[in-house]
Image 1 (tube, rainbow over the protein chains, first blue to last red):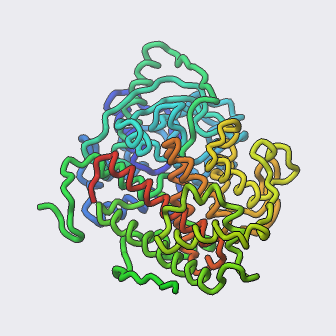
Image 2 (cartoon, rainbow over the protein chains, first blue to last red):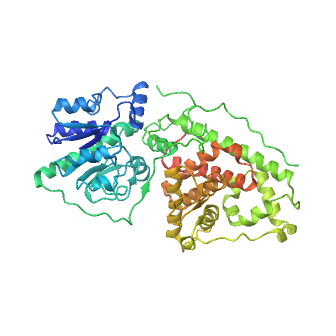
Length: 248
Length: 261
């Protein structure tokens, strides 16, 4: 597994532990003095009374990744870089004996020639039904267009979300759409990942299907106005609010 | 006599912060944006309305100071260049402006001043050794307005290329190579941002392609953040159109999603 500190990584590891399909080794990317946009969002969530430390679907997301790995006895190596294409990370990946790495790197990163040339395959779960929802924050676009969500497992290539497909799964819209970024999005990815890993254990292989690059579209980070519309569309109570008042 | 419109405005909003700094100098990446409930959308709408009114007042002042027939008036050229666009966005302006536009359009004295601005067609863009952004975006906007079906795939392709450039670099340079690498250093021409924004929002209106509305929202944030530099007639015309059309389409989307504000 190639991972950064994120709720996605934590849910992947916790789900794999729960279903007894643990990774053999983890290359853990971190720069201790630097936060990521997600870590800043997590802090903001905690400050305003979010669920960071209360557990999500029975998973405790408050434990730092290295502590989690140590507790579960998963060997790992830490690399002082958040760039999957850096020499440090490429070298660490090349030294892995495994041929398939689960990818849980920084959001938006594109794998380049150097890391792809290590001969490893990078298994990624994307929170959108491919090829129709490639790119970023696709959960929200899917909610706006289709009213539900999806996830796709595939092997990464050098472009955005165009690699060979392994499996796709649809998920219902979450009841609470306000925490999609930090919780629901990683949750559906982790659930699909487990399905793929369990099938791999059963079959010993991961059959793939190439994508049609002429079909589908690539989305960019959703604008906050559209994000708010996607979130508010899921709220049951649609009575108009006067500015500044809250429902009891 | 033209009158300046005045509108009482609410206090400076605190939830919609995406236009509070000049986004040309300090770009916004919108990562993990916070959720702030319906008040966020209300403040967004209020802020957009306020900027559109402010720009429209400037536009009206310009029309007042440069009446029909004067050498200084660039309205005839504007209306000549953008005639087809005016049919689509003309209703986005206030009544006074619509009256003025209509009067200009009918004035016989102006017909001789109408010039032809050479355009490059959408299908020709692929053949150019360099892509002049303003000309290219002007052609794309006119193609969207005319719902020019023949280069329709090319139209979306080219809109997507410029949108990608903006999304990745948060800038629109004045000229690009055929592979859309920047070929110059200047990215401060606000006309280009307004042209692309209006193209995207009108394309969204026709196709419901959310990617395009998303791009228009970001471009309009940039334009609002730099509104003090929107002074020319054409820039004002295009920006007011882009803002009003964006608001119209956001309202439509909230309605179809069952949201009341």
